[in-house]
Image 1 (tube, rainbow, N blue to C red):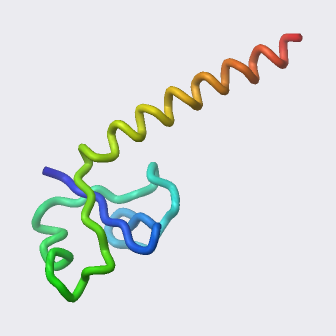
Image 2: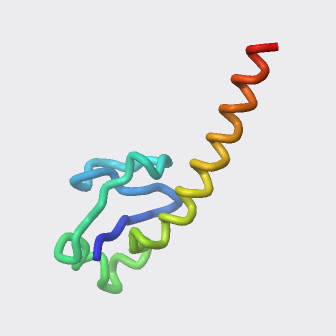
Length: 77
């Protein structure tokens, strides 16, 4: 299974290089890479299975696609 890491509302970027508020810029980590984050001392960091974010991403894509079509229609008027 693969995971994302979230701390204080921000996603860890790939290779643990900083943070981002954009899910599409988040790093995807293996079980081995996140092992240290499972300890009590790192309780501020939330471990999020990739499967948890799939539904959110699909909904966001659908909403953006719908909004894009609205903008295109507005340009044609």
